[in-house]
Image (tube, rainbow, N blue to C red; front, top):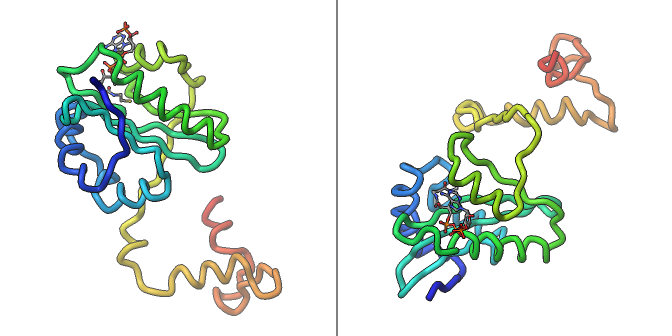
Length: 182
Ligand SMILES: CC(C)(COP(=O)(O)OP(=O)(O)OC[C@H]1O[C@@H](n2cnc3c(N)ncnc32)[C@H](O)[C@@H]1OP(=O)(O)O)[C@@H](O)C(=O)NCCC(=O)NCCS
């Protein structure tokens, strides 16, 4: 019998074993502490499927209050096509709808025909063509000199709402962020 239960931090070793097998590796965001943090912000949305006490599937949901996201939908090769994936996704959906989320997003590799067929069978439709963009945390933001962020923030908000940086950057009154965006 397949049983769904919440993911706990102590499941991390077994879950990462499954993801390594199913996805071929882990991403930086799969670090244990980060998952613990994300799970704590999304109570009840990280689920595991077990059969006879053995982990056979995972599905993680998150919500920003308006939209839901689905991650780490993975079923062990030996347990596929028995409805485990459907069970996991339907339960996450139910919980996300209950939170007031109106749409659930996910990303799937365009060549992963099996997963696309799977999500299609559950009612997911492909987004119209979009450009996926990302910005990863720059190293400078981690190792840069302390205070760098503070001066930028001051320039954006300014005293009493004025956007002046006069005297701080050679009299150029245009905030650094707006200049950089041109
Ligand atoms: C995609 C995946 C999660 C599906 O899990 P599963 O437990 O096998 O799926 P289910 O048994 O619940 O399938 C439900 C329905 O989806 C469809 N489906 C599932 N896998 C399919 C496949 N490989 N090809 C075509 N249709 C598929 C079928 O309609 C199926 O119903 P049916 O078996 O009655 O025909 C699983 O194959 C998997 O872990 N794949 C590798 C990881 C992955 O690609 N994850 C998605 C990342 S975005």
